Length: 120
Image 1: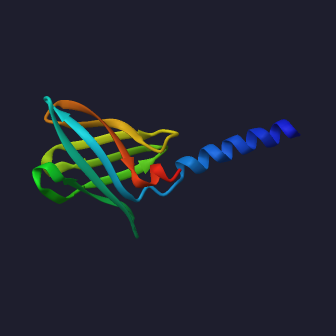
Image 2: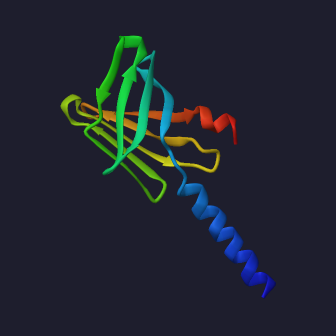
């Protein structure tokens, strides 16, 4: 009985970690052929699900609309179709998304962190 309770506690803890609210600002650095480019994804809840926009502070671009935003099974997918940009990342136990940005056939590793990470 104790073993079953322990297993249930571990499973529920794992599920609650990945069922968390991911809304907020997510910050990352993109290494673009030796040049660091900061990116910020602004994720919020809407009546129909999640929505997002992207900022590129180093390029002085803000509120670039994200066409498709999805978070399921600890995987975040963000698509900016008019710019040909896609982010695909997995939420880890440190509450960071570890993933890649794909654009024009190139793949760039990007880890996204949030202010909420420091509070954990």
